[in-house]
Length: 68
Image (cartoon, rainbow, N blue to C red):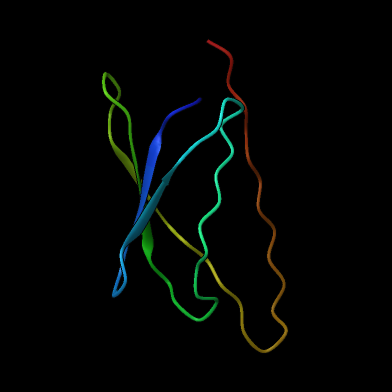
């Protein structure tokens, strides 16, 4: 989804918007767990927590695409 406002809430708040394919980039500190808030007019606001690893932990992330 394009033009979604993505805000990171922590000590140094920052924000960006998604591109026409829904991608976005934030320059995030790797040692901080924070929340990302997704906002777009006409849609329900959503929040997710960011993830980081330490001591060689591995992570598996799965993203689903829904077509409505």
